[in-house]
Length: 213
Image 1 (cartoon, rainbow, N blue to C red):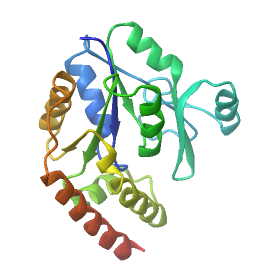
Image 2 (image 1 turned 90 degrees about the horizontal axis):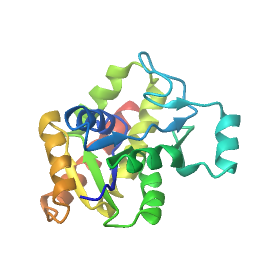
Image 3 (image 1 turned 90 degrees about the vertical axis):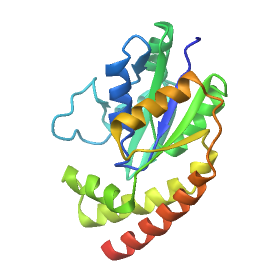
Image 4 (image 1 turned 30 degrees about the vertical axis):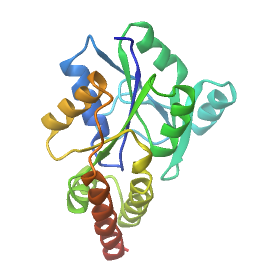
């Protein structure tokens, strides 16, 4: 099978990075992870060059001007970008490249790698309450920052219908298996229940945002 670009997008706290890491750990000969660049500060335990390339805003803009990013986006006041060299590195090794990126960045990647050269997967949290619990567990966001992330999550969920596939991350093992199944059989049909689940999550998150604000 020719290696493809696998776009994983989700609201912050949706679990896309965890799923990507698990895919590489289980099938290292099949998948490779593209390390993104960001201007946000590292969280506890994160390593430069492994989790992200942590860049100053000046360095980010320099690379941006040099055409080094496949896509880039601003999220919660910080800049994030996928380095072309990272994508090329993984594809050249004959492995599917996993991109853990934001929704607006996913659109840019799809223009460069239209189907069947890419598969776009939107990952849903099981509920608004669980998403909030995951964000609170990081202990890195203030109450106002949390409200901002939830508002952003609502905007992103409204764009989930643009993706080829939607999966619910209520069980990591099942979610990882589902993404792998999509890569192996990308023509699998979307479920009509996905749309209803997305609508319900939007309603829940909107209410949670009001409670926090």
